[in-house]
Length: 144
Image 1 (cartoon, one colour):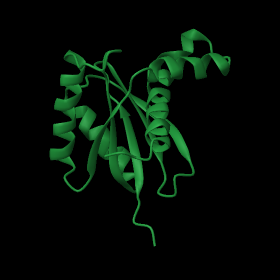
Image 2 (image 1 turned 45 degrees about the vertical axis):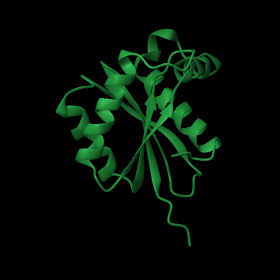
Image 3 (image 1 turned 135 degrees about the horizontal axis):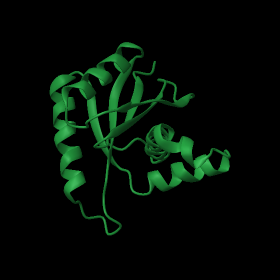
Image 4 (image 1 turned 60 degrees about the vertical axis):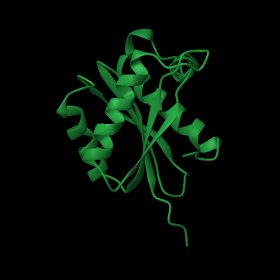
């Protein structure tokens, strides 16, 4: 019997945060509605709690922004701080950081391929970035 649970992927942003989820069987990975608001306030954690109430999740997968050379900058430090707050708020869940390099570009390509007007990208791009992050993590063997 498998002990896997669902995964909630988070593309943390300073103004908008995208989300995607996959079920325990890893069959249905879907983008969720993005959170529009500060990435540093308690409202974002409350929004995560709402998403967790709606599904069975064991892993919070957080995209870690890195530069092309693999180094980390200011945004990576902000995401690491957010991850610490996530772990404190949801101690029973694993918080996993995964390189999100180029996920936004991949999400924009998905939007272009779908024929989505650029003016409609705003909220969708962030959650599609979370979906790309989630798929990448799953395809790489779910590294911790």
